Image (tube, rainbow, N blue to C red):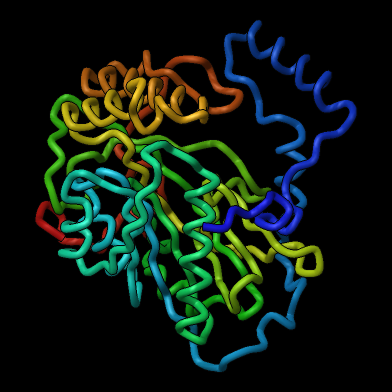
Length: 360
């Protein structure tokens, strides 16, 4: 499979470092250590967050194209997610997706079968057994561009990991939101709630994780001026025009199309990386072993993140939230203020569109 070079993949996009960035960040790191806090976001990323998007109708010509309303497609990349992938797919359909695709990266459990049972089209794409974010994103972009060309019309793509459950703002579904947006909007950002288990948590197969994992706090990592961690919803009008970047944190555009136009409305995304205690622990330890998916990878960040989640998992099940390792920029190194997620959102967003307490 062709490997994109950075300039091809990002259209030459991405954060550039300045001459004073490293000494400035060195000072910020020293101050953070003295205050026993996490480092702030690096200055080059802070600068980039204010340059790639706008909320103005900067490209009204983008409304040109087929007059039919756009389709809504969901896309998920998964590896050994049999406990949750059914609910992930069903959530996307309940949010109004016309089709849902799951790229299965060589799972050796029932991920593919569960995804198909939920109605997804499964695309088998086994890697070499190691985690590679560049390859994953290349494959994701390729599927989006191939399926958009196949459909012959505009598509709102909503891309998730298996532990991500986005929904529309207030009482809207994602489809409601997509059909209400002006034709020049390119992307929609996500406000993200990080969910944690408790002593009584017992996640059930084919249930929305909200049923059993209500405790949460806000994810405060920012990749745009509106304060969004992810931009996982993108209008693809034609193949090759706009692309998701790594992790779906930002959107890449050719120089002639910058900046990307973001909606003032945003999604609410529930994030559940920590679920059943024994299964989650086994998966993370296997993945981080010397021959595991993460342990054999050159991506040290994902290895460190997995080790951190293992620590958080045990502490959360013991409800020792005051001792949770806190990885958010500028925050204290330990401790998280966790509460029922409904206390954190407006009343209109406390309703859920799934049969609470029952299978999806």
